[in-house]
Amino acid sequence: MIGQLVDDRYEVTARIARGGMATVYRAMDRRLERTVAVKVMHPHLAESPDFVARFRREARAAARLSHPGVVAVHDQGMAGDASYLTMEYVDGPNLRTVLRERGPLPLGEALRLVEQVLDALASAHRAGLVHRDIKPENVLLTPDGRAKVADFGLARAVTEATAATTGTVLGTVAYLAPEIVTDGRADPRADVYAVGVLLYELITGAQPFTGEAPIQVAFQHVNSAVPAPSAAVPWLPAEVDELVTALTARSADERPQDAGAALTLVRRTLAALDPAVLARRADAPAGAAAAADPDATRATDVRPSHGTVALPIGAIGPAPETESAPAPRRRRARPRLLLALLVLLLAAGAGALWWFQVGPGATVPAPDVVGRPQDEAVATIKDAELVPVVTPTHHDTVPEGQVISTDPGAGEPVRKGGDVAVSVSLGILTREVPELAGKSQADALAALDAAELPRGEVREEYHDTVPQGTIISSSPGAGEVVPHTTAVDLVVSAGRQPVDLPNVTGATRDAAAAALEGAGLTVGEVTEQFSDAVPARQVMSQVPAAGSAQLYRGDAVALVVSKGPELFAVPDVVGKQVREARGALEGAGFRVEVHEVLGGFFGTVRAQDPAAGTMLPRGSVVALTVV
Image (cartoon, rainbow, N blue to C red):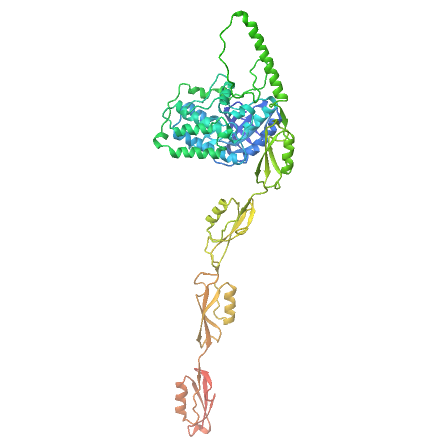
């Protein structure tokens, strides 16, 4: 495929790896201009319609996972006759390569890598996904040493398709939980078991169980407890033995119930160990190369066939107590022995036939109950001789009380009496909007994230009292209970609104006040002064002056308003001599105009205009009539 363009988008540039289920290539996404990994399933897998359907469903489920420890799934489609996935490209080795090159890891490094793997698995388990094929090959390391788990959903799609059509348990037997071998079913505890085996291998450099054939390894997983790591590495503390024992308990009920619970145990162990112990590593065992045995990645075919070991799903169980083998007999006893073996083989065949047809190994199709009410769905599953296991969960679109999905899905084979996981809707998940007003924008967004509500539109508004950068309000408001998909919009204060200061000098007092208020300002202190030049009630000046300062909405502007010219009373000068009268008037600030009658012989003021007491501004003319 190198050099080909897949789906007119992905240009394949190199082959990265080839495994039992797929070949992985490095490619360039021409649409988004980024490097991706393209995993192309082997063509024989695409021949099964069941596999293709499951593969697509699981790919969609895996694509919903968003966690820094999970290799992201970007896309899926068909490349010729084969299905493919495009995934995040991780430029680093997998743990198998690390083990092959370095051997056992320091205890602290091994525990921290397992901690990261469990953190990623915990995210998947919360989303209802089980990996089913945790192994060193599926744990990639980034250039900075962080672990990323790959191939979510792929193992489930392949396993269910093969089990449904061929009775085959497909997986890496070195890491298979006993319950997968015995009945082909897996839940989060199977992933926990695989992580425990992975931890054992990272610490000791070897797998706990080995054998010439995969079926021998599977038998040991079912019938033997994983040995304590200290049996291979004596200096290991008891806390490490206890951790591996807890993760790899043969009974699923005795293991942590999911990766989250297992993660707590790992972190507790890390905290309890001395740094000097965490820095130690085991010597590479002589048989460490067995960890890279390619046979360990083969599928275990458990369908009876001529000339092979028949191992129906469920046929491997706890080994029965056996007596010591009798001593060899004489040659004449051989016919009897052969006859006995033939009888045993016939009995085994009859037993296998009974097992698959009417016995515990018989299967029935899982009923289709998606969309039905819970009570009706439970009754239908029980009528099919199956055991419903109901898990309530929130759903954005499925109404409360209705079935969202089942595992196995409708029509998929299930052993009689087997469990059918039923996911029942609790309705859409709701959240309460936190109090955001008064917080900074950063704190408000953090509060939304903590409340698991999406961020909506953030817009700014001027505000007279709320400081800049502080939340004014939210929509929906604080305390409202809303669907978890509801985006919360925020209004952030831009501070006080700047305004242009108008020039109101020369305007009347009322007009000036209206102009200032129209601009968002207020009238401050108003001072009145006499003015000979400015008419009364007109603005003489303003503080601040127009263009001299930046003002904000609500600021006050002081005004100086004219009272007009100052008025003085005209003195009474009637009867006075003209010289005296002139002096009095001019002394009061008035100008004097004299009109003489008959030549003003007597020089006496007979009349004045305006009359005495009249209020006039300084400089006004007072006319005198002199006789």
